[in-house]
Length: 534
Image: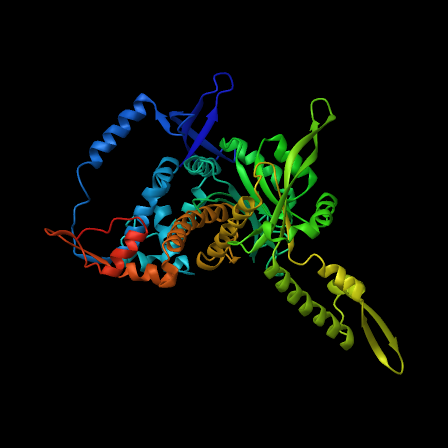
């Protein structure tokens, strides 16, 4: 059962329904039964229940107030780590939002998410064993058949409602960092699994996954699944459409240079989106500005000592174009933008070392006659190759071409329509690394490096549950980083330390939490969580 939102065109009111899918044997197609439960408050995003629904909820609350489930048998289970996740769910609003969007399944979703977090790289086949040893939200076993049914029951409407609620909790003034990763798959049955440019050089077909993170909170609140053959640059328009659907007005986003195109920048201006985007030095307007400022960019007055980077900003005029579909014409205008130019001496040195390694590899391949097709352009650019019967292969470097390539080492550029200061823009742009770390968490800790799922519905549901787990992991990592805990703990080590705390239950004796050490108490404090009471 899921939640469906439907906006009335005349009144503008968004009504909320409970939707239950079923199979119509006569029509041989999937159908749905809907029940009105309320309307959506446009300012808070909360559901205002109908009178009958309110009576049902009040009755349910009266039932819930009777107290915790009675203890009928003696149990001793691990409690400390799942207690931490319970409290994070309350702080971030994840538990509340899941309950609103998945009223019948949210506890099961949370239990699987907890399992994925605490059992790194654990297969769901081990969930029955894990759940017997741990306190968790659902409190019951979830065999593989039931978990598959759960994944398939997670509807698109309910997912979008959850994204909307989580996004509104982080609307503020923070930028949203957006990026895409590729996920390899062994399945040939999934429609979006395609051959594409794999960022980890895996030869398997893939899907692409786009993630959106809050720059200040460090928490993800939106993702999209894309066909594996879709390039980054083609996704910005769809991203703006997603913003419109979820009510994110005038959002501020961070994009790397793989998303740059004139069309995308025009689209961002059209939608009044604030942005910071990486741009290539080869672009004409960037190259022109860099050549003008190259000699003055590296002077002391442009150095930021904390960054160790030189930076300047130049206001530019962007030639804006917008196609009007109803008139089928092009509106041309200008927009103000800020081009930020940077020079990083450390990056220049590392760029040179990396280039030296590449050139040495190219040179060796040519001498041994082991040419690689994907290096042919580099061979031609940097070397002259001659072969004679007596002397064999002779490889001579093109020094001018190498010097020209090295001329741009250490330089890079950002484009923004809102941030005027170069180092403010750089600080915001560097926070985009949280997306890369999020991808690492998804792939390494949450078993998403290579998929073996053959059903599209199961894939959609499992991705969503893994996304929920990613929110919790991101919260823990952000707190660990801010509190300096990575000097003492690894992420797994910290969770394992809390996971040793037990809870004892016995009929007639209630629930008793085990002893908590000073280390564990300090961890809870850094996480912003009150330790469980004895």
